[in-house]
Length: 224
Image (cartoon, rainbow, N blue to C red; front, side):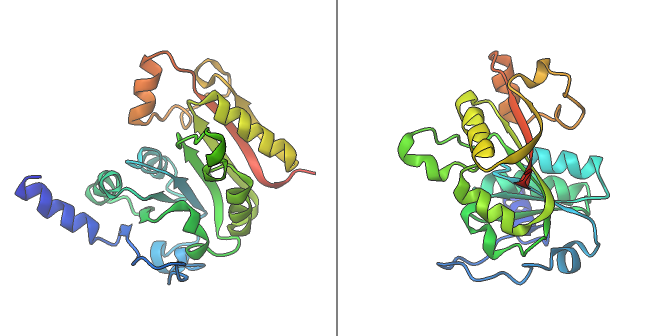
């Protein structure tokens, strides 16, 4: 890394746009837990998370499209987060932030009814049978999301893995959750819109290779 980029990297990683909590096991409740609107964004807009955000391409683009909402990109790999945080700082996107944590520790960072939406964009599908509990739509994670999301909270899953998509539909059915939209072929579907058309770097590669993109939007709490 050149001197200029290293200097820029330090500036981004110590900016208020990227939160990097000190590691502890189990993690202690963060000072922003239940207070993201008041202490971080300083507004009352709904909060939307992008889990496993990578470079934050969805978080960045949605923050630009929806200034009336707040967006937080979450990932564990710092080099990826650096790119999204750098964009946020350079373009002065005030309704955008990034959080460097492992997703299983979300409970220590967000309080009850604090989150309105969650986007899970192209996660590792973890399709090996012995890794089922690591899937981000597993009941283990769903139960955690339900505690921090509003009663009408929405989860969006976008994936190139048909088996993972079908697994998620099974979890949704087993927990009697309501599906709002779904398709196993997004780019040939009538539900495609300008938000779902946002493409991550890897998504563009997969599309060029002929992969189909699956999408499901569902309510986090029981649809009855």
